[in-house]
Image 1 (spheres, helix red, strand yellow):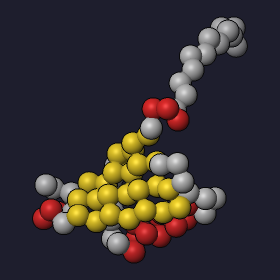
Image 2 (cartoon, rainbow, N blue to C red; image 1 turned 120 degrees about the vertical axis):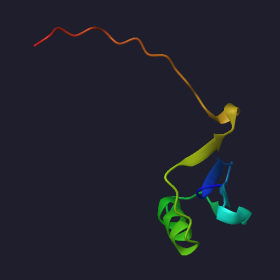
Image 3 (cartoon, rainbow, N blue to C red; image 1 turned 135 degrees about the vertical axis):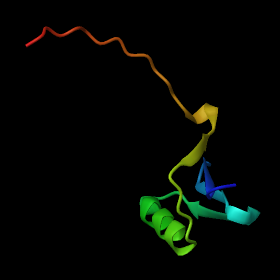
Length: 77
């Protein structure tokens, strides 16, 4: 494995983060989902030295809404 791989799962009241580092070491933690989550998540990733270019996100299908929108054409200016 060339780099750290990070996965994030959005649960009802928590966000779970799992990372696999170079060499196969696994790191896991959960944070309560509240308005300060982005700041705390960023701090945890920095503290644990979990830098990655991409993060895989898992969402519960029952909590996701996808809606198709039909937008009217606009005239060119």
